[in-house]
Image (cartoon, rainbow, N blue to C red; front, side, top):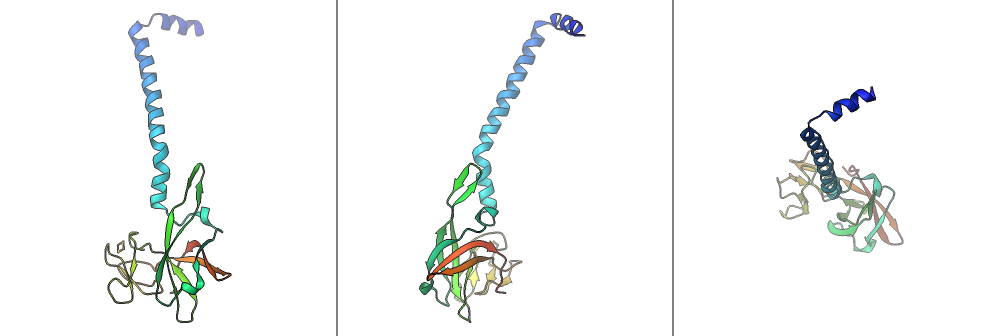
Length: 176
Ligand code: FES
């Protein structure tokens, strides 16, 4: 059988052999280029789509602010988390709106609008509600969705230690 193949190859016109080699190179180089191009892009896309709700932050709490700074009026605080996703490490900055409820319990809300993910702000409409400028969603101080958005604002896991507030992963709202 190998004799037969050898016989066939020997009688191929030369140009056909060259075409085959060229095609092989084109496929190989094309594939490598696509792979190199896709490498750095994928983690960024993943980060854009999935900024907070990742399992990587589970169990990790970040010191954010002194408990004594918190009032019944929501205030925004920024903090950084360290994310490791395989070979890709990053320190994205997150934000939380932290306030005391009517019983004096401290809670922290995610600023990500539950409509399409824009960033909400407190009281920009002077109505003591959270407001999303993208499509005008509104939420109560506890994060209850009043219009446009289908769900309440997410809440951060929170713990108090030695007078400081530590924030953990985001979870569904427990206040409303
Ligand atoms: S993204 Fe907030 S209202 Fe649409």
